[in-house]
Image 1 (cartoon, rainbow over the protein chains, first blue to last red):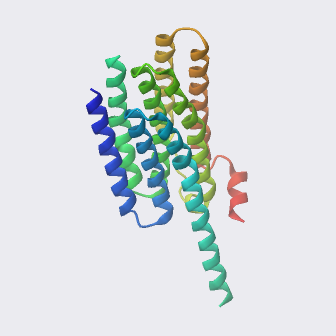
Image 2: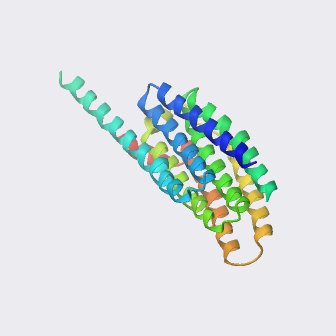
Image 3: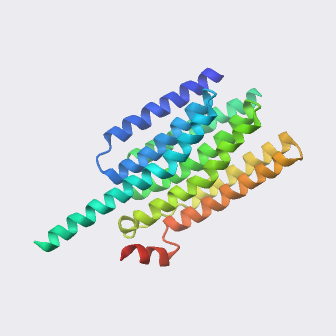
Length: 86
Length: 153
């Protein structure tokens, strides 16, 4: 039964990682990255490494999307300002 | 012991598989809702895994996720507000499903662990999970117009 659980979480990690690579828009990619972080946390827990899963959760579910979305926002604003200045 | 493992596997496959599909395809509204649903599902899976491996310390993972998951969704609701104002996502059915699943899982685990400090922790996680789910989906649906107005300027 443990093998089945490991297999399911490995498949979910592979699927969400592929989706994260395939996404083109950075804001949508942030969402897929958050789900990839969740899948990785489950995988680490299943492999009996809950401490790694804990740090993965803390970084992956809140910090990475926040950084990506803030950068996207800043780049968009700068682009808008340069368009307006021209 | 095996029953908890089976429950965790079924919940992971049936709940998180569609989440990956929903977050990888479709419009932005559906992706945000799918991500929010995924955090609740993974939190419940962590609870079931803690019971399955008979390690109460694994419950900390669920506690951290119950706090951080809604916080992450609020980040999206705040920073993607411009893209979400046209067609705010309503997911009342999905929120109700997630909340009732949380109630069922937490109740089953409370019955299994018996009275004590662990039960208080479980009840705290369940309360955080349900409240965070409701607040996050209300924020996504544009239920707090003051925040949306502040993010527009």
